[in-house]
Image 1 (cartoon, rainbow, N blue to C red):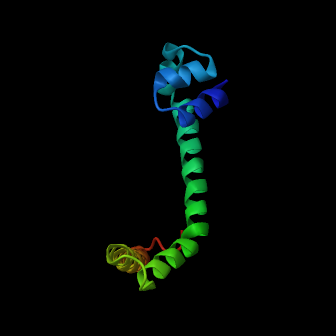
Image 2: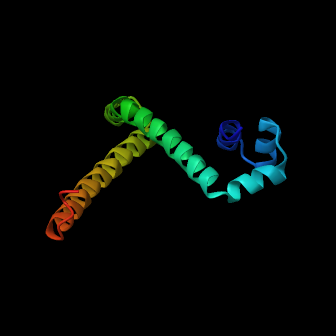
Image 3: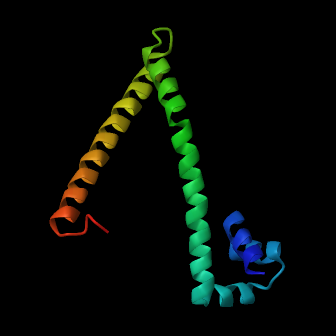
Length: 118
């Protein structure tokens, strides 16, 4: 029964809708949400769902960059579209670089305090 409730919570935007979808009362759903084991299972399901979405985004990232590059380089495209695409490419490049630098710094800090081997 928890599996259906968790699926409903993930698929709907309100507790009322989730309760209706999985055919339990809102009161029961609230009680389950207060239970540590249910919250842990719900948290794991949310994490799994977000991991799947992140994987899909990673698969599509190359195509998205190609589209932005194509628009930015298309001299026939409206100037506003070219500027927007160019700005997006720059912002993403800077964010990617910043993330890489932060990851390197965190890894170095973890190594310096002895957490690199865990």
